[in-house]
Length: 487
Image (cartoon, rainbow, N blue to C red):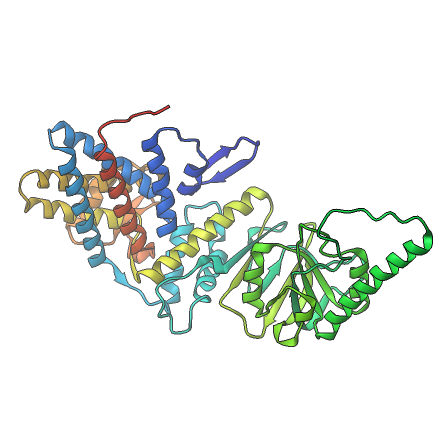
């Protein structure tokens, strides 16, 4: 289920992403802080399964409590658990099915499974292909790499419309519309784009000073010089062949003024102002342009190109964005234009889409799919129990307790689906013992079904990473025997 979180500034967040919920909570106890950091680690490592990892850690801690009551030493429990986690991950890899990144249908099934519990689940037909395409477009055609940097995907949120209006833009979208004050153009074909980092306004001295002008002639001369200086700057931009100008925001003085916008409009140059400093690198890589720090450096080879640059009115919203499409030699970047009827839906759609992209990234890192719906955890638990029978001494107890803890995932899932957890988990065990590896919980029908047939699939990395990270955190907590508060 989703959580509605009210933050101090009366801001409201609705989410069911474990890492988001925990990061917003004010947690005071150091051990609880470790669990919050655990969900953050899972978010970085796999992106999905942030709730799973915390639930699993809780179950393992419960198992530790019963083992401690039997008189087993904490260090023994800790080392046994770490070995058990390794064995469990090995079993999961055995049952995992290899997947090729060219197999688009399998990737879509994995992403749809991830989106099924989100607020935007009904839009998964649209969002799943966007998630898959946005991640794969960052890779070379051979698809040989084993990691993807999701920072190369720019998420642009725009109010208005519905989530169905979300689109993948092969190019760039800037949230601020073109400057219209001086009547400049709002669209440009065959654009030559210059990104300037200097100011199109009258120069200032380095020290703060005042010029006192006592007569009109001197005042006129100052204004005339100013006009001449700005006109000269604008002429140089025109001379370089640029017809679209991006101006970086400046904090020292005005990055532009009405006069410079007026001259640029007369020259037929489309102007987009207030480009943020952190966005410069992304814009340059996408459009293939170089940032220009001084007017003398303006040259044709430093300009980016695009077939179309246009102001686009956001239907249902109240603002415009600038869209760059048909970039001649684009870098490995992509932009997703997210739409939503209100802020809450928009931010949750953003988080959900990020999780979906992380699922694809997990498959790029480890190209194996396993069954969802608690099937993988039940299978690992069953095999661990069989493995534990062959062990002796305290290890056997610890491995069996670890296997029992893994069953908390199907148990919780059954509980959330409104089913009877104990009956469902027992049935799952029976089906897995009979050799049905894909048996998992069919949430929609409230029965146990074969997850491979229903295409409920998830990346192997999500589960193995959750088991390893949860076990590491629990063994760290097990080695702590006292809490010392230093004021």
